[in-house]
Amino acid sequence: YFYIDSQPDPSTKTMSKISAEIGNQTFSLYAPTGDEELQRGLAAFNEIGPTEGMIFRGLPVGVQTFWMKDMKFDIDILWVNKDNEVIHIVYDASKDSYPTRYENPQERPSAYVIELTAGASEKHGIAPGTVVKITE
Image (cartoon, rainbow, N blue to C red; front, side):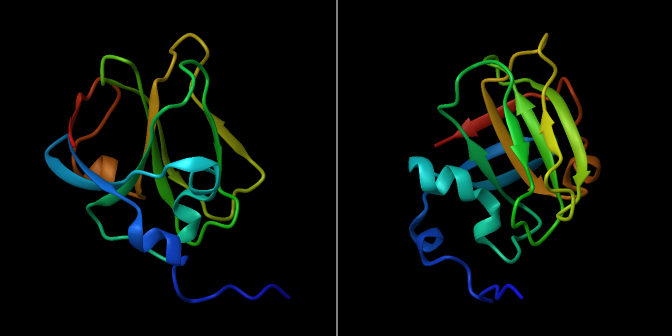
């Protein structure tokens, strides 16, 4: 048996957040820094609010691969290009899909990735072509 602590990882309490307008909604996005936070991602949380998410910046531009290891809830995964345009979305990635890997198409290089709660993309009109407006 695996024991999963019901409290979020203490490091997430100090993780900085940025604001991003995506579709018709402003989201508050956790901005992990350092390898450990980047690798853990949203798996550090038992849940997040409907207008919260996580942004993964500083990745090499190109194909960016994500998986759902240790996730406790389903999410939408958005790949965004250097022009801040959503280029690919995986809707409702299942928390139980590990070791499945999700990635953007090679012909559409991604500059960064945003994860939102499952259903947020559909609810807020987010689709490929949507522009992301980040305010630090």
